[in-house]
Image (cartoon, rainbow, N blue to C red):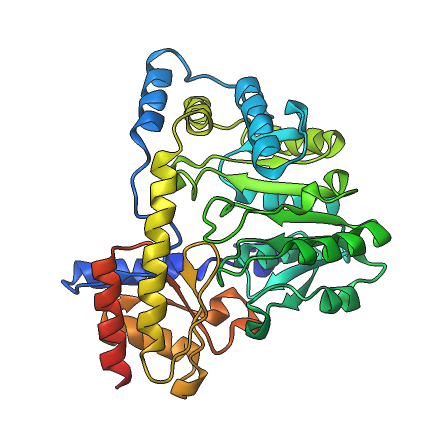
Length: 385
């Protein structure tokens, strides 16, 4: 069989490869602690489940509009205005199965072969994968520990040229937990406005923020029309398996993204969209309690890692990941991640799973119990000692 050449440019998510290996070891009787996969370990709140069940029992099992259930689009528009501080119309919203389709279809709609896309590195690996797959040129902008893994606007400006078609940002950030400040967003917005460049702002961890309030670049003056705001229900509502996300963008682009959905998936699952309405309208206490627990876990894992010789770890401001520096161990981060899994029974990811600038780091998800986090730290400590 001869595959199309573009398949050679398609990447993957190492987290799922490590998860598969960890599950294999578990099947062999190994007591694996999972710190590799990026999903909340909490169950979906009951009122959301109840809404889905009611929808199933009342006929929400048919095709819906490609752009999404009109009521959900209206509720999302209200939610964005409330949480991000700028007005949104329902026809500026496209509902999709998960968040990744907006990444893929947004790049597909905007980027021609040879166009350059600037993306954060270390960063979510699907950015680079989709840029390459669509024939664009992936241009990494490094996120550096010395500025708490924020994007340096001066470095960004130096990378921009006449071929730059899109800038991707992510805050709070996967894998580092870094958070862009208002000043950072203003500086990025100035670059985008001056060069008339679109920005894709990936914001699925908007609620998982431990200090201050979330800021979106789409709320900056002159940026709403230039921004694709990407969000989903996976992180804030523990709905990873439901596959429900959305993009907010100008009406012209929204119509094109909806057309791509018509061609690829027809529409997003109807009864799942009714659950999404319940999530945004319903009580927020379960989500807020989850974030409070994540904050407690963050402090446990950061303090524990910093007590291990050879490891230093910043305290992240958002998301549920830590990105410890392991260069002082003298062990390559890929080898160290493998050793931690195979010898210490703790599944983690190497920093290079998130790009070349992740060299010397590991990513650990603390979406696990305090008891398991403390045990994982003991195991890693014993391995390195």
